[in-house]
Length: 340
Ligand SMILES: [Fe+2]
Image (tube, rainbow, N blue to C red):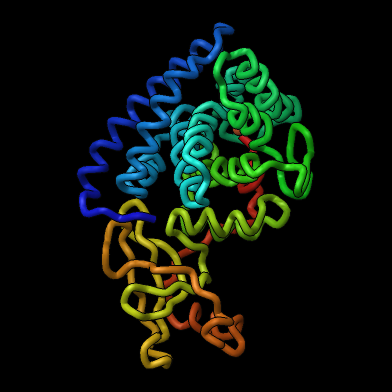
C-alpha cells in the first residue's frame, strides 16, 4: 500500500467523498424500491472519486468507512466494498478501466437488497428458513435490476449475481465452484465478507481487521486462498501468525491489532535480518500512516531457512501474554452472518 504524509488531510477529503457517495447509494436504493433504473453515470463519478482518494492514500478512506454505526451498514457497506475492490484491483495490477468498473460494481453489488425487508436485514437473531430464502434472493433481484439499467458495466452485473458464491460450490445463487467463478466474483466475495465481519451489525460486534483475516483464512472452501493472501497484502494487514519483514530490518510474526480503531498491526519481532540471528521477542505496533517502522513485505519462512517454522511460530506466539484475541472461526455467527 502507498503511504503519503498527509494522512490526516486525506481523511478529511475521504470523509466528504464517503458522505457524498453514501447519499447517492441511499438515492439509488430509494429509486430501486420504486422500480426505477440505476443512475450508472452518477455511480461512475463517485467510484472514480473514491479511486482518486485511494490513489492519494490507500488507507485513509478504507479505515474511515470501516467505522460505521449499525444502522448505517446497508448503505456504507456498498461504499466500503467499492473502496476495497478498487484498492484490491489496483494491487492486482488490473487495467484502469477494470479497476473503475470493479469500483462501480462494489457500489451496486447489493442493490437487490431492496427486495428484502429491513426487518429481516437488521434482525438481531438467527433467520428462519423463509427469511433466509428472502435474503438469498438479493443477488438475482439486483442482477435483474442492473440488467435493465443502461450503462451498467458487465463486471457490475457479474459481481451483483455472484458475490455470495463460494469456491467449494456451497454458495448461492448458482452453487458455482473453483474455475467456474470469475476473478471479479472471487474478489467480490472476499471484499464483501471482510467488510461485513469488520463492521458492527445488529447481531454481532465488529471484528478487528487482523482478526477478520485470521478467521477468513480458516474458512476452508469459502474463498480463493491465493486471492485472500493478495487481498491481505493489498490492505497491509495480515492474519495472526504471518511472517513479515519490517523497515527496521527485523522479522516478526503478526500477533494482533491495537489502537483506538484497531488500525495498528502488532508485530512480535524475533529476528535481526542483518546479523541473521534471533533476538529477544518484542511487540511493535505499526500505525497505518507511519513511514517507520512499517511492514515491508510478507516473507517466506523457507527463504529465511527456518528449520521447523510451525514450531518456531508457536513458540514466538506463546512468548508473551500480550497477544490480541482472535475471533473463533467456528462461531456460528461468522460465515453464516456474512451471508447477509
Ligand atoms: Fe450481498
